[in-house]
Amino acid sequence: MHTQKNIFAKPNTSGIAILGLLTAIRLVLGSSLFTFGNNYIQFSCAFIATFFIGMWFGPFWAAIISGFADIFLTLTSGQLYFPGFTLSAIVGGIIFGIFFYQRKPTLKSIIISQLLVIVIVNLLMNTTWVVILNHIPFETIFVPRLIKQIFTFIIQVLVLYAITRNKTITNLGNRFRK
Image 1 (cartoon, rainbow, N blue to C red):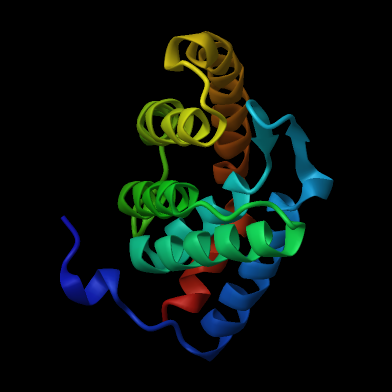
Image 2 (spheres, one colour):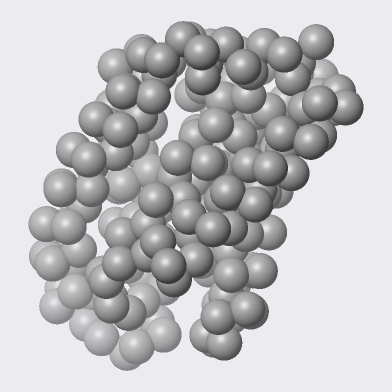
């Protein structure tokens, strides 16, 4: 298990620069340019940046950046801010950080982390927030979201597994923790 020192570790100077860059990438990938769908079912590529932040900087930074990105993107898009989605983003960042910080990602850890994100964050938490905001019965929206999450799971596992097989990308993280 992670110690408090590891979870809250300060990045070095180049790590801070990369954390800023990953935050910008997270904002771009989470923006409407890279988000597809409607108010009930959406797909975003922001999980890629969140994965790197969690893997290279840990659950604390992944949670902070994910929460910040949710608030920033909501306010700059003109949409109604709802703190539940910020909580969901934070939990997703924590899951990525717990599973991948200072660990070599494996297919098993990618599958388990994605299952947790999909079940806890996307299906339970986010569906609840959509129900609260849109006054739609849970049962009405759950099945379409479940079907979407099955496809999302497959896509995200394949993308993350492909990324983790690239030694150049994964070894970059070692430079930011020195």
